[in-house]
Image (cartoon, rainbow, N blue to C red; front, side, top):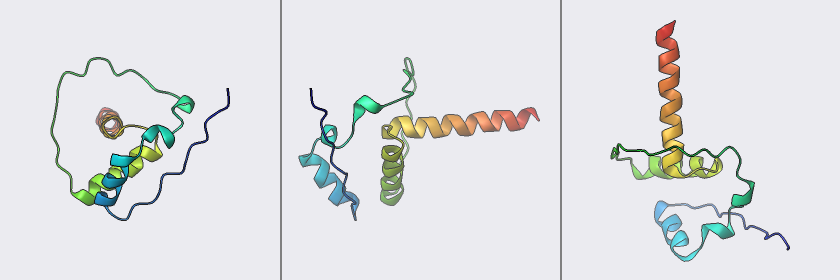
Length: 93
């Protein structure tokens, strides 16, 4: 079986441009999910929190999540968990 060659994700100037692109394209054509490493099941996440971001901040977060090969929610959760861990470590000192 021949491996599928994945396309490069284009650079977007605006969130609206990116949104229009993803409405007509499939992420499977752009990401090689078979190469994902270190994925962990987070278990049953029972609490929910709504956070509002500016359009620019959200676009930057999406790009960082994509660069780190994570979903937006998983990326934000990871960063918050890292921050909390550092705070716990600092408070022990």
